[in-house]
Image (cartoon, rainbow, N blue to C red; front, side):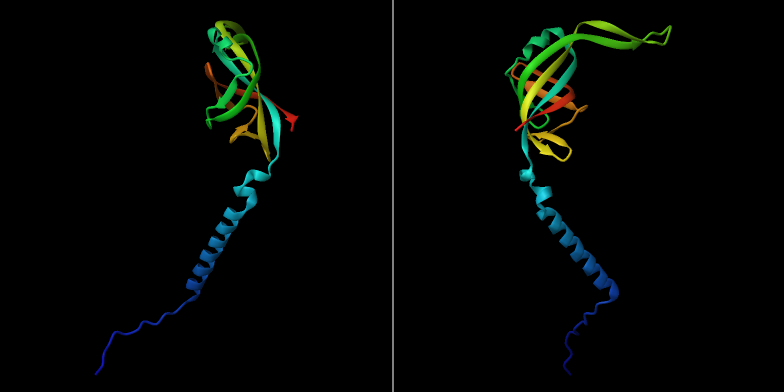
Length: 165
């Protein structure tokens, strides 16, 4: 008698077919997403010139003169070019507190500290939600960390103006 290994019968049931269809659908969706031009490549976006303002407060008074018009800005969040300084203004820094007796808000000049406003001009990519400068999204109200040759600081973006192409 010739007894050899038995061959197993391959059978599919409804659950096997459903799992295969789900897996193939998931793979097709992933291929579509990664090949989509809108998601992978922002090359179709428009480049424009912008000026954005960064307000740093408080800054020690002796650091105010370290930022100069014409300084090249490096955005330290992405370590890329962030534009060029076009103007700097400063004013006295005021600390806002609460009067413990009356409960009213009180504003007091803080000696030795200033509020510095730096306006930066850059080439940005126009996006669906605003502007991006070399991978950094310029958004009003968000922090901007930057470096110029003699100064490093972080401030809030307080305005963005599009200048055109």
